[in-house]
Image (cartoon, rainbow, N blue to C red):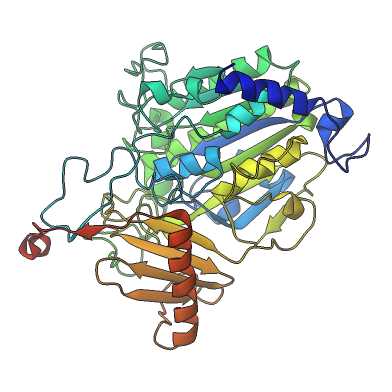
Length: 495
């Protein structure tokens, strides 16, 4: 018997047991009453914290995201495990920090072809795939008898590491690339999805595939993982939506204030007014609306949890600025709040109170144990070692018992970010930059925009958090960058 067959047999055996401490008619554990909870997990690419109406946007129109928030729990301090995509995606599926599995940058990474002369450090070599030895979230659900389907962006390794080898029964459009190689309009040039009619829009097509999966699996427990390529570049929206937002922009007053942020060598957008990007956001919102309507039509809405999340902050600095994350600082590729704080909503019918807001800091590693406990399945603590179940928060608790959240990004980003690490403990967040070992300390409760560096004013707190961060580095065997022997400072000044 091979490893996967053994795990499957063990998982099926486990699901036949009553969960310890679970009453026969417990509302907490659907598995114990014979009707298991279904899951729709929707992951958006590059969607910023402020890119939905329920998170403060007055430009983008997101009625379905807003409705989901009104029917579930909206998190205001939810974090991606990394400011770029591949590591965060791996953290969701493994329940581990990216540093622990040595997958710390987007694949293949900015320095894939060697260090650049304008970059002072050389990032450590990192894994170019999510390893098969990890027992993924999808495998845990598949072992328990769930139908599992992955649709959309994968970006976690080459073909032998695709979703179908990581616990998903079906893989639609999931390949090694982190963007739609053929663009958002058919033909898609994607071997894992057939081209549609000329001009078909990818976000709509992926939603069509999701609806078909729901219809085919309505009579069995399922995990649908819909991972949209949107709103990642290339910026392409449907014509009618672009025109709609162009008219909206024309009616807006001109922006006030400076057009430059220190994080970018180019102008950074101070307001949300990009018509094409807005159309892409609306298409993702419409996708969610179609999914939730299908669940209702199939009679599944009351027994299906819907989870909504983004993989990193909105694109808003040196690589481009289609959106604004203000009042958060910076965006994708940075360890400031704009790069890692995300929109996140969990709807758990009958359990999470309608329209509640949670301010407790949580992170993408937490989804694995959370979803297992929501489903009434046995936890796998040796796998999701860096995640905590959010069930206590969803069912009324005010806090989790966790000392801190951590980030390790020892790479340069395409958006201008430099190698750094960060820790958040309570209201305080410390960032350590590897180029010069400087630290910045912020009180996020009082200074969400990270404008007032308290490192010199609060040396004891700075030292405490720095020590905690270094101890964490050791515990996860975090790989560090090294000096670039061919560094040419004049090249950096010239850019």
